[in-house]
Image (cartoon, rainbow, N blue to C red; front, side):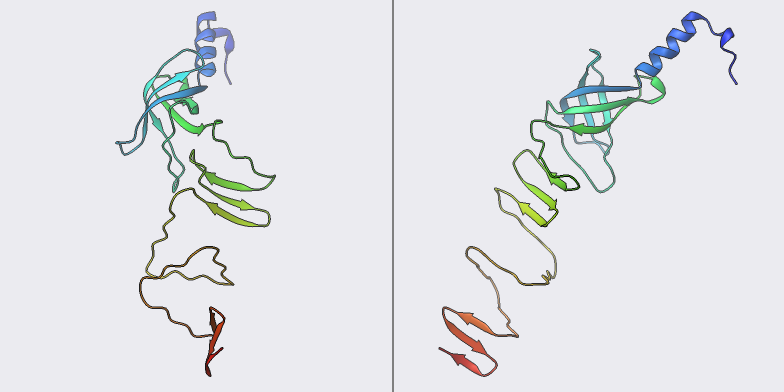
Length: 173
């Protein structure tokens, strides 16, 4: 297919350099989240090269804003460092450990949703808000802590409050 005898040593070196620079590891130094496609304003690559305004590609439906110091995997399209994109970021400072086959979504504030082998855990040290016209929970619900209700409470089954049982026949002590 190719007649390599017609390539000079200089051509071979140029091809080698382009292939070698196609994939690089680096570190985020600053982020510009004001564009339609998030840009890493500056990254430091392990080779010492410091490109600017690198597009940060996210899978559809997922978004992140990496901290300065996060690690990146950068691609130079066609081996051309003038057209780089970042396709993955990682931050080992905050990596969450999970068991084999498990999945988690987490951040640097110890907030996470963990799909475990025996259930799902969602945890945050901050307030969590769920907003929808109707929220339906199927199964038994256990609340550990206080319940504050602003609005009406409708009950179509039995209810026990402070040792007093209420059912369709009325209230029983």
